[in-house]
Image 1 (tube, rainbow, N blue to C red):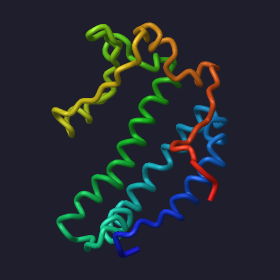
Image 2: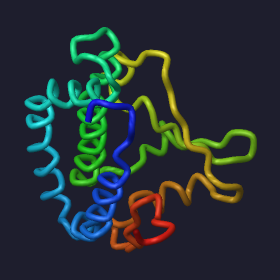
Image 3: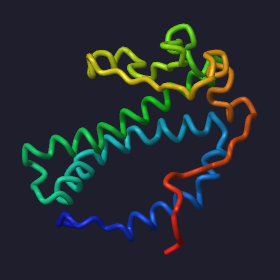
Length: 171
């Protein structure tokens, strides 16, 4: 696509397929999830230039344009970073460690429970120095509840599989 028109039918089809197969990811054992994500990383590297170039072309500029830096950051780098973050958490769980490092990440602030979610690794702190993210829990959620309920599916607490946004109407 070499225009600024978004191909929403293609996105709708992709979301329908994702919804159709979402249960298969939740049924995948932890070790297999880790292996799948480990196999994904080299593929991200192999396809990085094509992914960034496709993003640039979709926005109407050349892949070698200075504007394409955004497509590297929002495409292959973001995918690799998110895959790495998910691997980090899944490996912690597989090693029997807490899903949330309660001592370092969960705290109370102004009467609400807050979880520091970024940075997590030394690479995060090095590459994105000064950036941080936190999640504020709903009123009444305690730090203990956050620690006890985090990543419940890995401790047998099943939750419904959901892909957002939910469709408003079937096309």
